[in-house]
Image (cartoon, rainbow, N blue to C red; front, side, top):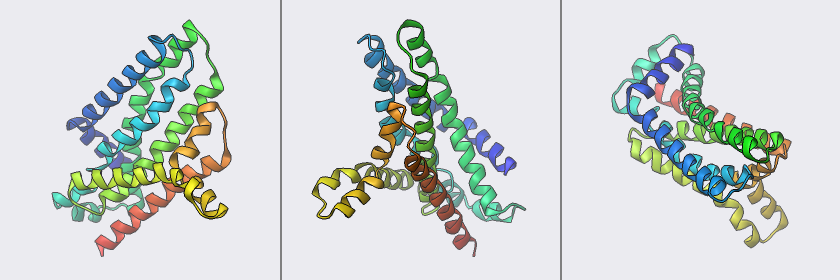
Length: 233
């Protein structure tokens, strides 16, 4: 697993993908922090994290779209299967490499709460809740993107399908007011990325939301492994 992790990390930084991802992420984060906090003299860190949710949903598929699609396109997937590694190790190695690149970008944003703490108000629990929510969110979305990338050798198709599934999971709770039964309404809310994320931004650690994101991550990692297993046979 470590060998796959290091190989993927090197590939990210030898190509333009990691640099494009980090540039887009940090430019958007900087713009939000300047406009929502500094220019408006707003000390509420939630003003920064709420738009960050949307940004991460937009930029994460940039990292995952190539993971297995590129292996299929270059016909290196069969070579990958011959390595003395389990499919689970390959999937987790690629997954952790993706999270590491995202983590580098998020680490830079730690300077924002420090600035707010120096010049204004600071809530440790709210900040911790937001970062925990972001990590859980990108884990689930990265696992989803990995699974989608096993289904096609076209990176663009992989990214577009990932955006489509993310959009459905994001907007599904907006259908709740139109649901006919209370049970269906509750189910639509339970499966929404947004409704499970929002409580963290207020420093509320909801165990059901944590379980939701972890379950989504495990589900898509398992589906990724199953998809690869079917291709190996």
